[in-house]
Length: 401
Image 1 (cartoon, rainbow, N blue to C red):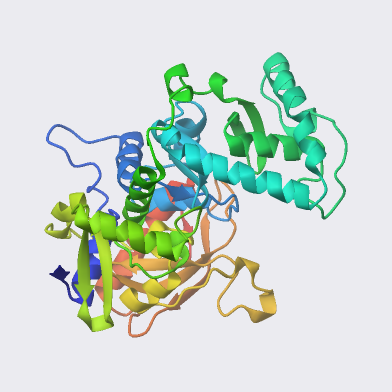
Image 2: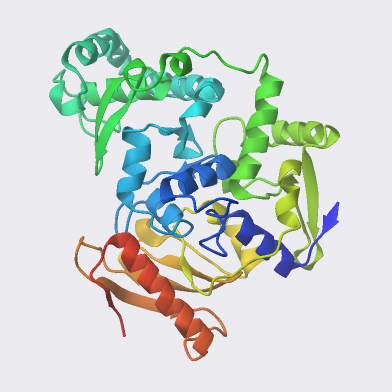
């Protein structure tokens, strides 16, 4: 077991997530990695990034990447998802994106999610949706990529399903089961195509690589730890998803992972907590942070912030994403981003909904605790951070006092 101070543990998380220096992901012996290569490098470490379509200053994955990859733009993510298809939309912790190469590993997740959808349709008395699946597949193969609007098959009635149309529900099920994939996405509007038309045949036809459930559980729990960097055994939002939320299975699998020396406990006595990291990530524990002097604006669903209790204990920062809180009950604002400086969360920032080509407008800013703009280094860091954020948004400068 390794024993770390609270400050040391924060610093480990920061460098694990490549949040200390924009050059961390680009470092290599010959030349500098381009932004696309940096995103790929980051995804090989984090595994999954949660997807949310709400767009105020970019969608959640856009915000995750902009805080780590200099030169990242939302167009780059579209390229990696829907042209190069290095990345894939899929279920993991909620709706997520992950490397397409991992698709075979998620066979059990697709099966479990599809079973949930079938059960829900049956519960709502709408099992007839499943009878339309062959027809939908035939239309997709015959007519090319289609959205639910191009497939008129009748209404399900309001309030009975997340899709109001049979076509939307059928496409949603086929996507969940992995028979179709997203061909393109514009805002929240998706078009679909048979998965064999989107990914290489070898990848589509690859079988489940895990011969039994235990092998899969070991891989999946280990992978989720890697999504966060280090995580505790107790229940929390970081364990959302099929299988992972089962506390008895989690304890059993952790015991196996410890016996196989695949995870390492990290004790943080100051907060009376023990976390676990992947053994293969130990080199990161021994590295030093190389702060570049700029603040980062973190995504509301950033991997490092998945568990709000962990954030409170480790960073002494209470954060709630208030988009679903009635306006009158909000403590801060509708779409507020935590502000990271070095290994501390020093405040929060609310941007005005951005329109491409216009200035980045700061609607509100709240300092945390003793941090304030009077310190010259922090003020300079904030200005650099706002300039970087404006470049990512392709904004015409920054409108802030």
